[in-house]
Image 1: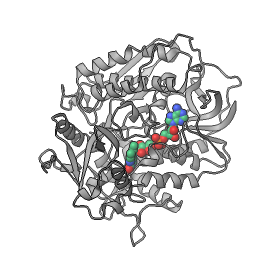
Image 2: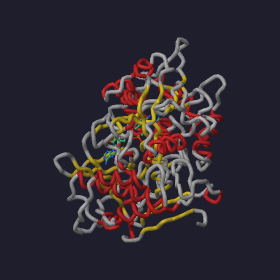
Image 3: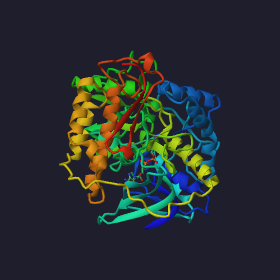
Image 4: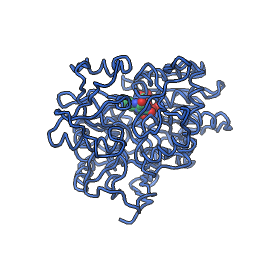
Length: 526
Ligand SMILES: Cc1cc2nc3c(=O)[nH]c(=O)nc-3n(C[C@H](O)[C@H](O)[C@H](O)COP(=O)(O)OP(=O)(O)OC[C@H]3O[C@@H](n4cnc5c(N)ncnc54)[C@H](O)[C@@H]3O)c2cc1C
């Protein structure tokens, strides 16, 4: 058993920002199920949004964020985020983060969809995530121990105090490790891998979401999944992301005969909100018409977008041809573990930051380049709060959560979950499809899976259970929301409904009561 003051589960931007900003006299562990730089943060391309332009202002960034989120965001969280952005960028630059700067020494500002101004700060052209992660690692002190290849599969809870005091992990040999901490932080990222077509890293399987739900955390807005319009699409498979910054630089979406598909669909055309562009491309592909990004107008494409150039070339797409084949795929989860402005959940001493959290900043659809920003802002804010907190007393004895030794039912293959989620809970949803998906997921006894003892399961079995649980949360919430809004599109109800305009779906499991599932719908009458 290992003890520390702060246990940070995950090693993306949110985790590393927190670790670097925590007081040097705190004992900190950062742990990851893979290696330190593996995750969505390191592959982020486009950049970080901040209102730094001469004619820009945080208030315009604020209104753009609300508009993209279809006004279901928490306005005060959005205000704080957008106001914090400019100084955060200066701080990163001062700490040695290598962003692309112009001759004047100021960051070069890129453009992305639904932003009214150029405000995307980037590094290495399209290697922003890698640059930020490397910058943050430099800032981590010797008080931080990094543990790689440890898969967290359970949160330790004291039911009497309603408190989280640690986690259990498994290494690749199947040995169990127990970690005890005053503060336990989930920064495990999103869940892109529950979908067949995704831009996300292979490790992004919704683990933290399922862990939190099992522990009794409130989960909110799980129906809001962002499908990125342009994944490189070769031989029916997604091969990686083609950043929105490419359209920001002037690329247009076209059919094989050169027809521009976004003209007449939205006033912002190719830079319309992501859900609108994704749904339009999806409709064409459903009709058997391939869609391409026409990049012929972008000079020096390979210099501005070295990662995308390499990705295309590795997959047999020549940049010199001027056209990149694309399809939409799962990219980002707007919902997640419900937190306050510091990252606190409803369980004492359990926090969530980064993509696993739902702070209310993204609403029904995330504005491009706001998620690295969110991880950085909340990582810093949580550090300030923990630094000031009186150190909690750890429980004297370790409570072990009551788990049943029930037999494990046959689990599905992961690719069955991914394919069925894409088909039934994907870009375009209907009541029938969602009901069918929910039934399929529940046939694996989701309730029972919450109760069993995970100690004896393999990492593959645990990952499958986490994917099933997360898929179930997304599908159940999507079924409940009887309207279309942002990333959640129902072709059977293809419009926003006023009575849903300020309503959120919250899922919470009453783990103390064992069997009880509670669906709190702070919601419209349906
Ligand atoms: C291709 C791509 C491009 C993107 N481009 C941009 C962009 O330009 N701008 C922007 O703002 N956003 C972008 N995003 C989104 C952004 O990258 C993510 O939202 C953000 O990086 C998430 O950071 P995080 O710290 O929350 O999690 P991640 O970076 O995903 O890290 C999660 C960590 O948790 C660990 N973990 C997970 N489960 C477990 C477990 N069970 N046990 C132990 N460890 C675990 C993982 O190993 C990893 O270390 C992009 C995303 C993708 C996929």
